[in-house]
Length: 514
Image 1 (cartoon, helix red, strand yellow):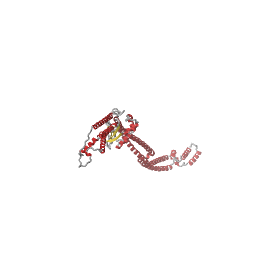
Image 2 (spheres, rainbow, N blue to C red):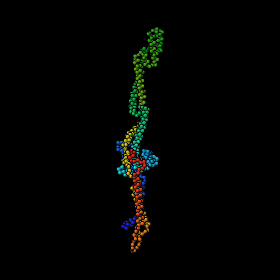
Image 3 (tube, rainbow, N blue to C red):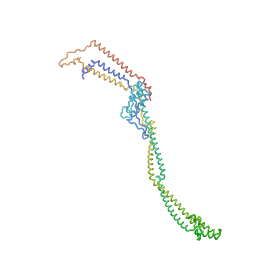
Image 4 (cartoon, one colour):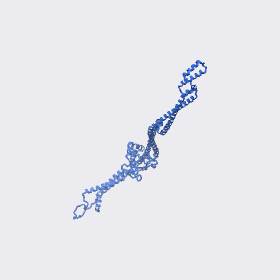
């Protein structure tokens, strides 16, 4: 770019000084008024980090699920509700100059609050992080700090409350499950007791004993049956011997062999002798003896009791002993057969009993295993509940508390001023360029389109007269007056904006911060 071109630009700016003196300052003045005249909004920021548990999981295993990066938004949705913010509005009015209802003010808190994931070290935005910043905007910087601090406390208290409640719910659920399993085990124990009462000695645990007893009983029965055979043979021999003997000695003489003969001889003797005669008495005794023998039905015991023959009495006693022994042996055999049958029944019923009992015991074993597992988990849940109540698990930690902001987050005053300066320069340049392009006046020889071989003889310069000087002075005075008024107005707006505090807004020292 040559010196002549630069001179042309400066010449154009000098000729269009009115544009430079008006458009640029007016644009800058408007942006300054907007920057300091718009109601400012101050942003308070608190940073919270999801801190992992300080105790290894192999020592205490928490029953509460860990928060993932995606779940931070879920926690935000649960914490940042109109219902939870209503208490903040009740304790601390965030918009004292607005005629809104408490619900509307709580809704505006939601709209003015943003959550941003940040790096816990640099505090810069990060897409994946376990830390986040809570930004809250308010026209009052002190209220912005107070409300943002209360919002941070909501997150911290919600985390502790929810994790403690979740651990308590887990412990309560496991407690109910343990009680239910214990009740089922009691029912199964009742079924086992009824099966034991139903099958008794036929239960599987008595099978070996029953089989052993069955074999012993069978051997005893075989032995008893052998003894019965021997006793029966002995009874038969003694019966034959006893039948061949006479119970009384008088019958051995052969004269008193039957009742009819004795009765005939007694009648003859009574006719011949007196009643006191020895023969008559002997015959009477013989008749009585024979009659007694007939009335006893031929039993050896009765015969032996009335007999006076010692050999007969011995034989009868032996026969009665043999018969008693036989009766006793038969009774023992019958008892053994009954016992044998009973044990056979028990052994036969054992398979069915074993199936039923095994099924019930298998069910009880499963319940016992589940109950023990539930007890272990319950103990762990109770430990985790105590652990969570003491905030030993994963927890939200306040990394940075909100501080009183020195400058508003909106509007960006420096940005607005720079934007006004940029637009002012751009508009001034456009206006100068347009005016120069539309101006047809000839101001120098360079503006003439003449052949190169035709020389320019002379040019008459612009001569400013007294009227021009007076007009220029008046214009300069007006511009300076306008600049002064604009500077006063802008200064007043800036001072008012910097020192003005919203009516009713508490200062940072008077805001209750928990």
